[in-house]
Image (cartoon, rainbow, N blue to C red; front, side, top):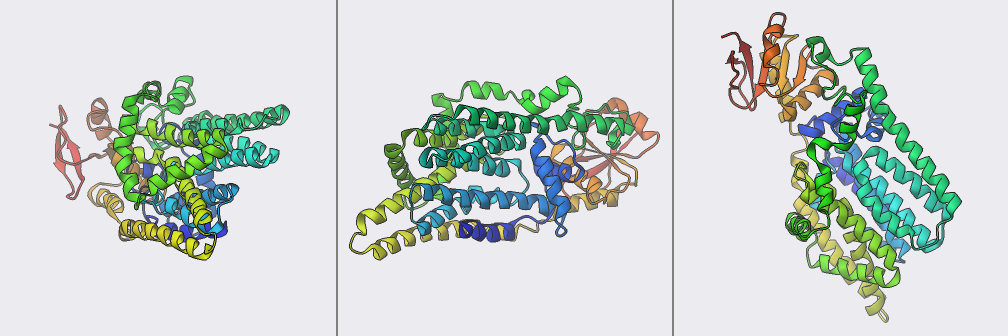
Length: 482
């Protein structure tokens, strides 16, 4: 299914953002280059893959290279949809066009343009699930073994993929497991996960011992973002990092299969899915999935669970600022349903004129793709947005070399990229914190360094006054004695 992969790849890579971003995006762009430790849940497999990728690719900015991983993952997801459709004997052209409705759906396309863990985790977990389908439909034991190991890789990249992979386990129940093969494969998958997550405490200890994090020179305890988030060299830090307990995901999981969670998901994702799948394609997808359920009930149940469980979680998880990144599997299963329904329509009504029936179906799918293209066209115009780069330039212009630059997460991640990846900040030290978090330390820091705050509006700091150094949004303020 090379065509199903290459066409989205060309389009999505062409729309990838070319520079550093803000928020979690910039954190991933930074830790990928420095082999750091990102925000929870640590994502060690992603860091390893992104580190290899950014150091192997010799062109474009580091930020753009990391962003491109998302485009590659989504393109791989499209090819996987086409391969899955073929397992249900869908005509190749219908499989390809349906797969493209996934890649170019606006919700999916947007998230293929910037650095994020979820596209890569989804792509790996989805391939594992499709291998499970192949096992049940073709009695391919090698596919089952490969899928189990790949599931371990997916969990190493992003442990929230277990929400998808639970559905994959249901799919495998369509045949009796070969016990020995499954046991060996699970052992290998577990080893992959253990080795990947061992990176976190080992790297944390190395960063601390060798004092790679510049904030240590300020007397700040280990465990700051970028180099050593949560300091997983300690047991408490490790548990907090990989579980994200400060944002209570357990409470969301406990309410996952409730009417309230279903309402949240429908209200959050329903309108966007309807806009991405026009002409009643959601209904078409349901019809296609009904065909799957009639033919292979456990496969249909597993695929639906793999799609719905992450969506239910994302819609109800209050700490999640971008819940749409939990719906990749929902869109993938929708595309599969469209492919199967379209194929069965051609077969049912194309007895005497199969070419005409196929032409009508392909035209309707093409119209959906035209809708997707129109909705996604704006992504090309924002790919060179320089707001994050401009923030770094303002900090350099307004502060002295060696200054302490305190900034909250959304902006600190951008400045960390400029400090540790492209070296644009010189000897300035970026401290990810709210303005009031280090009040007790400011006087001590000011004896040796200029201390500045990045803030949208003048910060109020008890015991200090401030002086604005730059304009723009956000601004940079210098902390002064009263």
